[in-house]
Length: 385
Length: 104
Ligand code: FES
Image (cartoon, rainbow over all chains, first blue to last red; front, side, top):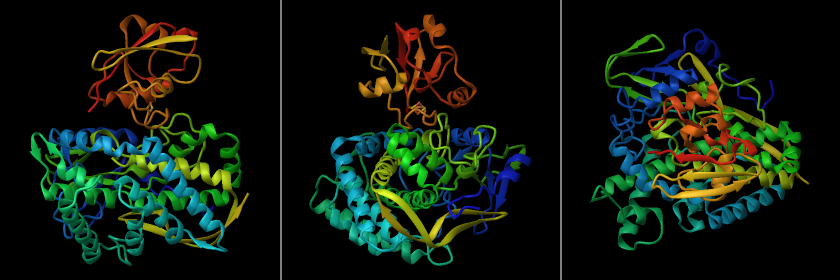
């Protein structure tokens, strides 16, 4: 097994019965594993709702550490549509030329930084920094603010045993409260101020709603981006020929981004709360229990993907669900895709090879399944072109 | 070369000329409203959804199974729906008229 491989632990269950089961803090989850079934459930927001108790659709559940509803993520149609329409243009800004140019500069700089070092612990010294700096662009706030977020370390939500840690979550929630207060006192051109000034259905957003959007923005794009970036470095370490190929055929970069994201599926799954007794994969699920949409499993479904466990850098048809599916698809996808696109281009231009020196895998325990989602740490040496 | 016409959701008509690549790319390069092409054309995002004018179905052919599966669960799809990233520009598409589909 290559060090950079992410095995698919769901295959047998997916093929044999279509679902899996796990417990999560005494609130069990039926995991939907096949792509077709998953899409149907994701689309059916009436039976499988997002607007449940805040934190409950997240796995592991955040019910005990969070009261604020994340918006638009934990809101169902029809209200969902108006909130989504409000934030959508802001989250499409990564397509603008200025945004792209600044992000390119940031990624160029950080690649130069690690090239100048002897060895680099990728998670802390590369991915977390890259993610934090890029987030200042998404929020449209000064670059220096990223220093605060970097100082929090990789796990704002997680402590050592992966259990949810209320104290760490509070660091983030208190911080966001403080910044909202500042934006009320002196509004600027940042996301907080935009939200504070916004109206949905003729009503101003409440402070709690603004907080809900901000928590989503911070939490949704942290571990996911860090894993995508770190896993990319591990992949290129073992596939230097892919760096050469991207340099020689830059036109495939977009496809390569989609393929890496399919393969990595940085978010393993997302839950929904069942609103009526029903069935998934011919398996009864009861009202007020949870199902999960297991993106990581669906993205290896051999009924849809040829050679699902291989990274086919220029995969042409790639109907993956790594950014979710239907109404609640990932709000940060444009930002994430832009980061990955620029990262691949920059690595192909500047890096000749990467050597893995040491690593520790990050394995999620999901009931009957164990899934590698990335690395707790990954130490490498970069060699420039 | 092919002339392709897009009718936007607010009934504006945009006619473009292309020689190669996908219809989605042509639309994105020319900022046709409603065609975003988020996934770059790998059939994953459905932000390139169009309805083919009834008289032009023969030009485009029908959707593949994978494309069909994506469209199946789209609230705005009908029997003339296509994801236009799956339409390769060629002479055969000359004169094609596409209605940009609504989305949420
Ligand atoms: S551009 Fe994404 S499906 Fe066509």
